[in-house]
Image (cartoon, rainbow, N blue to C red; front, side, top):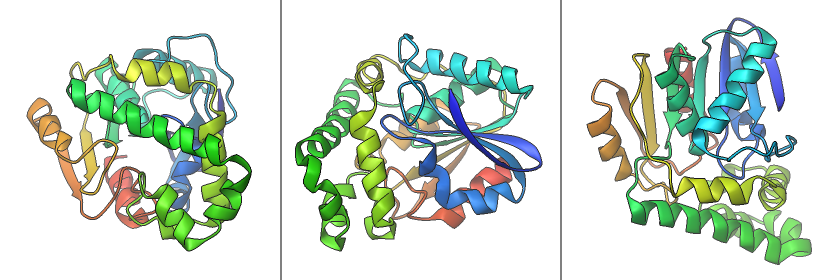
Length: 252
């Protein structure tokens, strides 16, 4: 597994969602690296990490992240996760391999329709990026193009730098682990949490894992801290970087 590391202090591991890469956390890194030793990973089959032949499900990714941390000599870090990565973070907390968990719109709190909706939206985004192909960079370098093409993931897509939007779209299209992870998304459900401090944060304008799923999370995790990210989308890190960074700092 490939990863980005910066900062100093207690370790904080960041795990992206399906089709994404470590750079999704970049809006938060200046604030986080000032207080933590930040390790932002590329899961197998995403970003610059090659596929590893595993199932592509939450338990497997938790195994992979834990193995990476073992190789780095890091024991029970704070863990932050987004979407699929949020499910991985919760699984690490359940196993006791994280000291604290912050999950942004984590997978696993949907029913069968919600799972299919999530699979369909991320597949449509990937298919659209592939279909547009050579004209995608030109479209995403316009305000109208970013608003139209990135609005499924971001409530404020114009906060995205054009070059970052292009790189993110290309990473989604190129992700070799996408098909396996998409399939497993439909099968995995939240199976309980460990006894570690847990924060669940959910954007009220999330179109991929709609905010109503946060109510189920509250019911299944009554002792967790639940935060409503008003006006934020599925990836809230450029929508409201200050609040997202604060939640990770407070948990870490």
